[in-house]
Image (tube, rainbow, N blue to C red):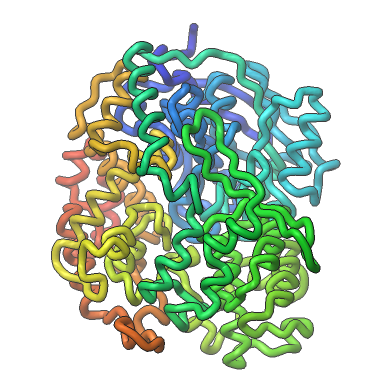
Length: 629
């Protein structure tokens, strides 16, 4: 047991791999680090802070790529047993990059004996990392160049002679450093946002393959089993009904009825073709099976297959965000084309949210004469043209031609390259493309998305929820919204550090109290709901500090896209004329910063850092306050 710290549920060990030298080493995970940062994104962000230098380019060999498991990964815990996170400096935002995925890869990484894997350096040729419990080696992957993540997955299993090996891989987009590239495991499960696939590609790392055979033991087995049984029972009930039936595509008609379904690149807030791309229509005509991840008590993976027509046989998992981005946002009402587009996006290994926003941006620019037909290589990039969507996805995935190469940079950089009025059509926050909620009519969401540490994100604080559920007046920002966003943000940080699936969050009836109990039963480390909430706050402040250190974390970066503040909703109905005014937005920021204990520039105070046990990082805020960030 030398070099390992025995904490129940944790592996107690961190693996380091230097791709440049081939050196592999391990170090213990301390109980303090485990308790303070939990696991998943919390542990990953702390390791990123401690193992990177300020100003490191995301594509530099020195930028660490961190695979992290949670304390519940590898256990029988429903949804929590099957997750992993990837953390690095984002090539999209220049700040914290992080994403989670579920499936079967995470549990095996934990069972191999690691709470985290820190990958630095750059391999001299395309390679994959093979982790077989304690045996770690770098193997040639040149034969997989250009292959999709799923093809790579299958080929590596065949090469290793074990079908039960689990693989997390990039596609051609990652190899070509497309800034919206993702990492995919188990065919459809994506480490989707913030460009983690591009960081992996920059290291000449095609895949990580893992086989884990060690036990993950929990501290209180009887209590843990009872808790798991309870959560399983709740998963059979109404708390997860949406995910088991229509899945997230149920959102299409819900948001459309609220004038909150961003359409034609945030021009309209309602889509006239919504019925044709609804969750109801999708399930009736296209969904062939619904599958689940390891240890899950619900099953939410709606696998759609095109039965006829030009895209016959196209198969993909389809969630609301991707359906929206390549459907209503591009003005496209053909589900057969959207399923085909999603299939291609998976094959290239790209973020299914960002890709649609990038294409919609290009369509908007085209319709306003900012880019010409000559620059599109003859593609007629009008809204609603499904064939144009598919043609452009291929160009972006391959970085083909001027337009493909430009759009592979994401909308923020593409707008700078194109110039002129292009910035007006670039819908992003901090460089990350917006997800599927019209922020002009969901103003709590507008504020919440703007302060998310990973850029435009619905999964950092769930700020759309009070708006959609009618708990607040969604057409205005007022005092009190900051607390709602901060409180939920703390909980979401814990969810993503335990790596509990957000689709199961409704089964934790007592919220943070249930999660604290879950953690203690598994690890044997007593933690109160208040302490766990404090960990969520600590993780939020830590991420903010990283962004500040990288010159991306102050007030001026907590902003909204041009269209959200300058283009009122044109559709008839209660939302007509809705837009987020700069005045109300600034009031919202002040409110949020005050709740967080940050100064007017959005920088945490030294007192706040000391309170959270982050005093060792006070130098970052001192530099920022002196104008150094």
